[in-house]
Length: 215
Image 1 (cartoon, rainbow, N blue to C red):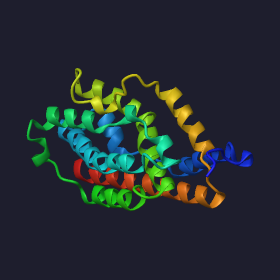
Image 2 (tube, rainbow, N blue to C red):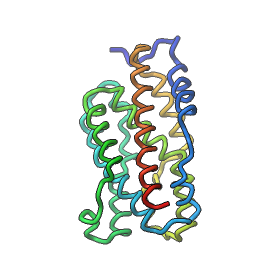
Image 3 (cartoon, rainbow, N blue to C red):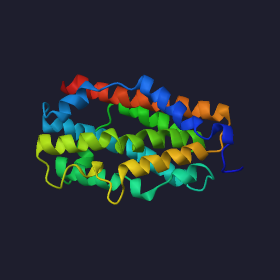
Image 4 (cartoon, rainbow, N blue to C red):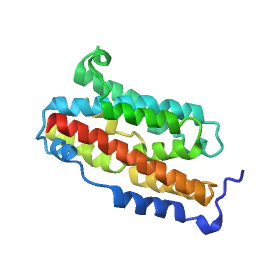
């Protein structure tokens, strides 16, 4: 399989993805309240805990797909989030943090979808990978700065949002270039975009459930 996309599709995938996600994106009331410091610290800790369950499912998929000729091009060690999340959870919950966190039903559903889509299919892996990490490198950067200000973090508790040595804007552009070079047929592109759409909805479901608990 060639790793060069059909020239007629060379900008199409990133533009199609952008158009679809813009239509489906919406602000989360829970995130807005968190960014404003209007919720207790425990609400932020709960968000970090749910992130841990999601990344604890997704990051092993990167290892499983690393040798795939397409998916392997989207495995970036500098993006790995689990060590930072675990440091945050030790700070927020204490040394026995793992016994104090529980996946919400919406998070469990999200993780189940990742397991079904991201471990044996390049388009499924890249769909969930780009949804999470491009989100971390865009809106996640805004949220990280907001919670530092709102909750007074000083080096601990917000490491999840910090990508050492990564320029978010440049990395997003590089990532989009790789998407555009993916050698997928139009049908495979459709499957990829549909899976991104599903990942978006599942992420919103997690935030909505957190909102019902904490708002």
